[in-house]
Amino acid sequence: MALAMLAVLLAIGTWQIERLHWKERILARIAHAEAAPPAPLASEPDPFSKVQVTGHLRPDLAATYGADVRETPMGTQLGADLIEPLEREAGDPILVDRGWVPGKPTRPIAQPHGDVTVEGYVRPSETPGLFSATDNVAARQFFTLNAPAIGAALGLPRVAPFVLVALGPPPSEGYPEPAHHLPRPPNNHLSYAITWYGLAVGLVVIFVLWARRALNE
Image 1: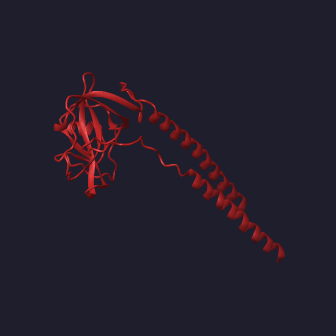
Image 2: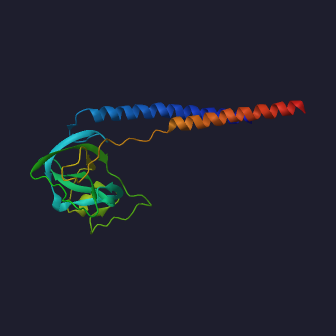
């Protein structure tokens, strides 16, 4: 039984080491993409690719996504991400996540006029889960980043099947505050591997102590 348990613990620890190297490769690709200049938006962009696209923002069709508490110069405030459609000459409108804005802003929200070029990363559309918060369509408050559903609620019959999350520094007005980097998955596999290998060492120590005691009886 001790040998079987030891084999299981070592196998799980080794699997976590393999996951560690796999996650490091993913993080390296993300870092490389983040350092590279944005590419023109393709017709079918890869998820989380860094791109840029030019068009005209529609603040009259603005919506909010999610809920997030942040520290601001005015203190702790509850806010959400500002979603605005970007109309372009060729292709369906794109929902742009311009960044976080407080629920009760004390300063005006920066709003560019005319055509703008937005740099950001492609975030795949989501579908609501069993425990997802209910969207408030009338107030244009959404808690699931479902691009087709948000577009339909805003009166847009067709939108791109993804959301473009803006990257960059905040405007001089202060809001919205765009994302500063591409999302990075957590990498805790080294600590997991140490835990499983530690349990294997503990098992060996306990077995040796038990075996010595059994032989001396």
